[in-house]
Image (tube, rainbow, N blue to C red; front, side, top):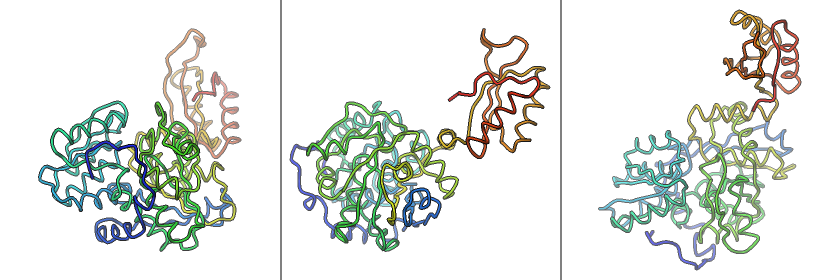
Length: 419
């Protein structure tokens, strides 16, 4: 590893990482990382038309994501660690580096962008790392970390464009083959491309016919244009709720491997990822961040045709705070037609709320939110404006509840299109 910025030379995939490198990484990681479970899902198989779906739950890995695999594999091979290491990260790599440093007794400094959730920052500090917040995007944090490495003589641990990082992440693929031998297709999130590069290396060495498909947010969809152009395509900016894969580009090493070993890359919307987060919580009883849910979003949205196939979905991380998870599942339920917000006018405040709650309960729905709203000039002066959030079983159920509220004496639905 080096603190130098990448050059313009693009190596071959074999020059970057081979199956033997991943097997060596697996030996180093023995007893350090969890062999995460593969959870078979009949529900997701039925929804997608797949023969079977296996969820590779890396959100249950130490630190809450796959990143400890690559970080430990790389840092365990450093020849001189007296001055410590520095890394840049949007969150999960930070925790992987911090824990690896704790286990290997290496001092670590992690530079994170301002958008990194506070929960990820605090978790990183909890593993003993110094956290430096610098830059409004990951790219700015990355440049700052490189400068810091040069200034202080630290070893820079790249989040994805490093042979040993890629090899460590590839151990997910070794586990997949043992847990899911009938595997036809694997879906993997792409940020900078380290995880999919490692997994693809293993799977293609085992069976070139196994399909490896990358998944990116629409607002950070850089890998497909890179593959089509035969050169790295960098986005001028990114716009997605999936901060864990909000990278603007591949780099030389991951571009080389993705170009040769990944079959396709598809995109999903933020709302489709919210649906996947919701269904993972509801059906698989598993908490995932948006980056971790992106592959399932691709499967369920139809972005990937997996009819009749055995499909592995890599749920790469679950580091999301409770407030954000609640917001994501609210959006997901809205997309599924199982949640609606409305602005009501209620007479006889506050006693009129009794009939409101009774109507919702009588129709078998849940009153999730009830807040007094700010009055506007358009509001009936004889009614108190309130905002409600109603959860139900589906679009028809929600519509029935809204109709019932609108027909209730003393209640008028003024706007049921809030979002």
